[in-house]
Length: 170
Image (cartoon, rainbow, N blue to C red; front, side, top):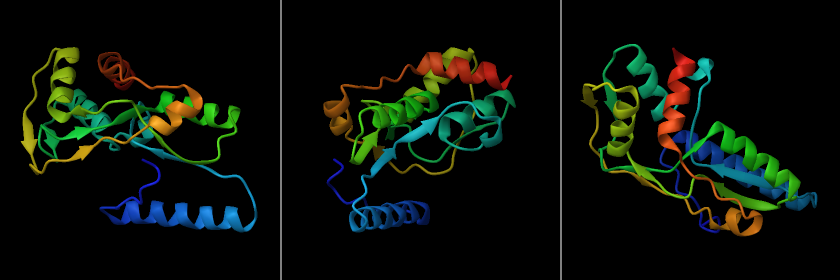
C-alpha cells in the first residue's frame, strides 16, 4: 500500500523517491494539497521511446525480427498500465481533487511468459528469446486506495493493446 516506504532497487527509483519526499515536505510546509501518482510499468506507442518498457521493446524487436531479450525469468510478474489509463487516472485525480499518494496500475500482474505467449499469438509469430537474466521479479502494486476513493479499476486488455501498438509501429 501507499503507506509503506518504497525500497528503490536502482538510482532511478532513489531519485523518484527523493523527489516524492521533497515535494511532500514542501507541500506540508506551504499547506498545499499534493497528489502523487506512483505509476506501475507503463506501455503504449510513442515513436520517441521505442526502447522504453518491456512491451514496447519486445514489439519493436518483433517488427525488426530481432531476439526478445528477457531480463527476468518467464515466471516474473509485472503490473502494467497503458498510457491511456495513466492519462485517465490523472484526469480522475484532478476531477476528484485527490490529495496524497496513490498507486496507479491495472488490478493484476501478468507473468513475462504470458506476455510472450500473447505477443506471439497476437502477431502469429514465434520468437527467439535471449535470456539475459533469470531472476524472479514480482511487481504487483496495491491499487485499492485509488479504487476505493474513485471507484476506478483498470483492467489489462493485453491482446488488444499489443495489436494496437504493433499496428502503430508498422
